[in-house]
Length: 191
Length: 349
Image 1 (cartoon, rainbow over the protein chains, first blue to last red):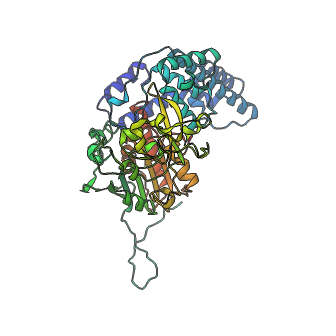
Image 2 (cartoon, helix red, strand yellow):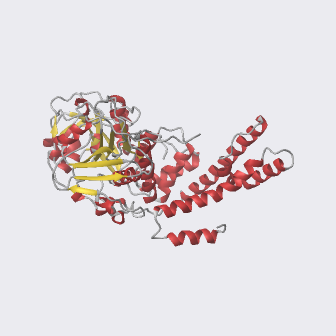
Image 3 (cartoon, rainbow over the protein chains, first blue to last red):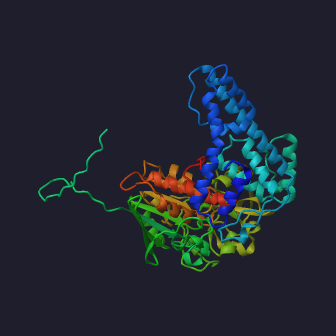
């Protein structure tokens, strides 16, 4: 399978009845397809002026799509090749992050509500209802402040999600303006 | 290299060693402890154990996996033999706190608590119907908390029990507070008890009287502003209430605290303060990263049973880690509101 239509047909064939093993096999086949070009390029990037240069140009043109395969490459003999390779890994990562960031920023305008967890099985307490933009804000925080302690991040995110809608909208707008996503949240006394 | 040849021999009674091949499976015992309101008969049909293991189509999370040939002994006992692992898992189900406490000290037992976390107070046991009110919300606890935890001020009225509210004469430190309260410690206010819990709540408070000052703060809950109180919840040093982690010599092989948000609320207490720290494949403890509906307990058990590598008399770690990461994938696929099972904060997968 190579085309989008073929992959979609393979997925549709599994639809409701596909087993976990079926889906794992499909994912494995997809992953191999994704990895193969980057792996081939990685095999050749140290091959010298002709083939090596062709591989490098193709890696650059391919952009982040080469990353999955390149990450499987073993180390290179010369320091120059190793450094060039690392440089491309980082470039791929940064380009991917920039695109994810753009999607999250766009989603900050999406005010649609997610399903209410209270409609599902009984829980000790239910998560606060949230909109797509609320979730995007929390994810922007995770993306841009990876240094934050996981427990603290979880608690502050939950506090944000529990706030009234108008306050959440204010926080999102402020974050967008100052480009900071871990601003102190307003306390009820501040409101 | 030449493959080794396996020789079989009989063991004679005069030998000091055994040289026969023992093909019996290793038996691993699991104590499945159901907390109040999470007894099997009260659960959503898609979460019942072992029914959802026997018929995975009944489970939302497991419906694409093959059903398992679970052998049900009676209402409280079932087992599953994994030929691939060479392990027979024997599961005992209980709703009894004394059995839970006894399980914690058994070095060969996997103790899985599935139930309320009670804001971090700890597991809670009682044989009462869902939505019951009463003192069992306090007396049924097994305390596993930080010295101080925060709760909504209407909690005691809502559930009808007496709570040990912290008076303003006690110093509340960030270090002794659960993570949510920790962020509020510098912003605590003093108010009269009655002004925080209302006349209805005053009789349900042990310690401070009606007009005594207590610590309080305001916080948001589901878009609304609520008052919070602070209660004593220490996992140790409460002789008048001996059902606490500090009073138990915890030795169990694995402990999975499957309540809501037990990673932030209890892990530090269990691992760092109590000292139940992993030692190889012993004293493993697992927690939930967020609110849980017990689907994590179900899926973890399923994947523990269906791990397909030899495990007999070997390290339990690979089977546990496989089950944990597979269960987490199931939870992730189910939606963003689903918790993840973690051994420590920052853990991948």
